[in-house]
Image (tube, rainbow, N blue to C red; front, side):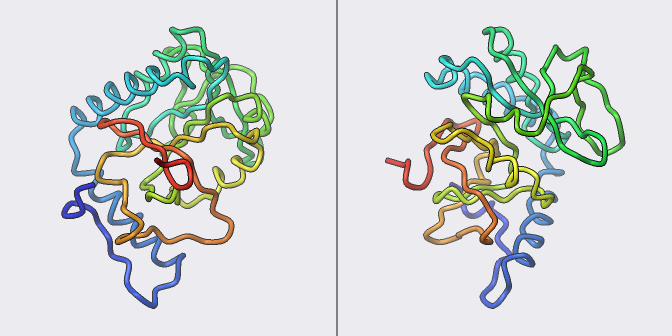
Amino acid sequence: MATSSQPYPVRAGIDAEDAKDMLRAAIRKQRQERSERRRAQAGEAIAEIVVAQPVVAAARCVTAYSAVPTEPATIPLLEALAARGIRVLLPVLGAGLRREWAPFAGVDDLQFRAPGRPPEPSGPTLGGDAVAEADVVIVPALAVDTTGVRLGHGGGWYDRVLAHVRPGTPVVAIVFPEEVYDATVRPLPVEPHDRRVGNVVTPAGWRRLGEQAG
């Protein structure tokens, strides 16, 4: 963890919600400065690391997501999982802004439905609780810390989704290397509703977090 390149505008006396907003703005700015080539390279490395994990190799179903442009690319990962015969479920925005899931059916099937939204599968959607089918749950993040605190994009959807994950299912966040924070010196702000993740993957490798670390 290269703390010299980590944005950390958190100060004493700032409440968690404001601290999260400040961190999100700083990390998003840093992500925008990263080239498309570097994001693509990160995605290729992450795909190789994830599919090499025994827990992923043994999975029948994995939930993942389509990355937005500033995130580590996920298309290589989606294709690698599908090539191994793993059923891949992606988030879809349903009626009334309800979040659901739909099977990944290849890159050509992904559709941009609205500006600012990641591409989504075009096929029939499943209920929001379809995440319970997953043997591994892969989630986006802006940052994580070594206790498993995850800084999301601010919508709260994944915190609600993770309540439906089967007990014991590995939950894995994807970030760039400098977005893994040492909680002993730079803990991420956390609120009671936040759900922690047990693992993080970066182009540098897969790491267990919190009580699972060691």
